[in-house]
Image 1 (spheres, rainbow, N blue to C red):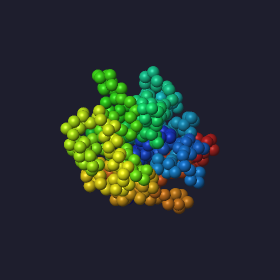
Image 2 (cartoon, rainbow, N blue to C red):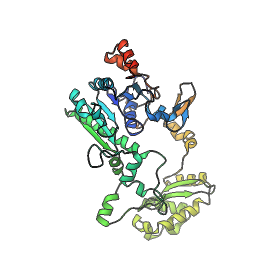
Image 3 (cartoon, helix red, strand yellow):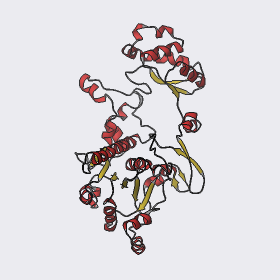
Amino acid sequence: MNSENKGPLAGIKVIELGTLIAGPFCARMLAEFGAQVIKIEAPGGGDQLRQWRKMYQGTSLWWYVQARNKKSVALNLRAPEGQQIVRELARDADIVVENFRPGQLEKWNIGWDALAKINPALIMVRLSGYGQDGPYRDRPGFGVVAEAMSGMRYVTGYPEQPPVRMGISIGDGIAALHGVIGAMMALHHRTANGGKGQVVDVALYEAVFNMMESFIPEFDVLGFKRERAGNALPGITPSNTYATREGKYVIIGANNDAIFKRMMLCAGRADLANDPALATNAGRVPRAQELDRAIEAWTRAHDLAEVLKALEQAEIPAGRVYDPEDILNDVHYAARNMIERWALPDGKPMRIPAVTPKLTDTPGGTRWLGPALGEHTGEVLTALGYSAQQQAQLRAQNIIS
């Protein structure tokens, strides 16, 4: 991030009480766009994400991205002294992000009622599996369960196989984005409309459910139950993944009426391009398998590079299936500055995803990578007025580290 540009959220103070994915991802986006994010972690081990997936010299590589631009304060929330520090931090905070099970913060005397009493302008983003009320409120909820409850897993995979998951934590990510949207709406209401602070209640299953298109009305009105369809896009034809001569894959979306005609001509099937019955999507859907076979017969006769060149010339939406190496070598990623170069603590270079979305005047950016556990404890407590002696005493009591 340009040192002269502090981001559109400069001056916004955020307290992150979350762990793992949904809450920290939400707070990460706020930090990427200039908010001061103070992440509270348990002394000793910190956020478990520090130890998840691939490690480098004892720290998860994921951590360096997920916690970028955040300040780490190691604080024992189970101790009354730790809870008091949170209340002091919340006194002038704009947003608190948390993803504990509903009721946990209340047990620690740092729930919504306690913090709102101290700071009526506070916005609290609460991410949980099932929301802050309802009969499932107290159940532990992870993104994978939310994906199942929302219907997303039901429609993902192949009809002859059990439902499958995506290769990322999509449920947590979708919930995090809803948390950011809710925080921004509540912040705007507070600023532009003179409103008070409020709770943004994000249930993971509801956030994913929000993405489910016509899943419910089609069943409710027509009794139609959308099923798993592999790589095809049910009811919209042709749109699928096709093999090429050397065994690579290309994704083609030729479901627009005009694009469909160009696709068939590109594939050497003028008969299908000019078939009146296939002129609209309604006519193509019943013949989806026939059309997919025709397209794949063409793609299998050519290498991926030839296929992509022909499709680009015909102005047909298509693309290869990228792996990490493809992304790092792609000219468009490079031109759009979507890969940043940083160094790990020992100096080893590392490339990471850049910040999105792109704002022309106040873009977000990376100011530093995920911090060491408790790296900013002293800085933050000193700003609250805690003397060196007081901090030493708290450390001796294992309240901070």
